[in-house]
Image (cartoon, rainbow, N blue to C red):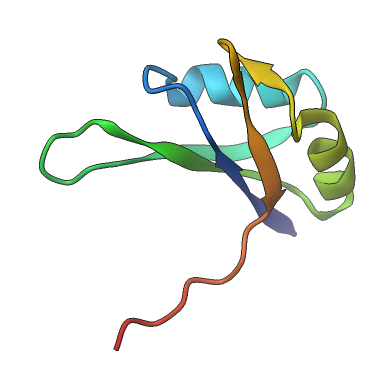
Length: 85
């Protein structure tokens, strides 16, 4: 099984490949995506990384607060999406 990690405070120019490779230094990455604005296509400054269940704690400990291109990223387990009313 896999779990999804939220990654916030990303530098605007971060690519999905770059984000995946940074996490791959610590855990096996199953998937990665950066959320973009629908109209402009520009990064919204956050994304998600999928890792194996057993790697969640290791990934959070290794990456939460880590520097990525001069910015301190935020990493924690993603919460389920809240329905819009």
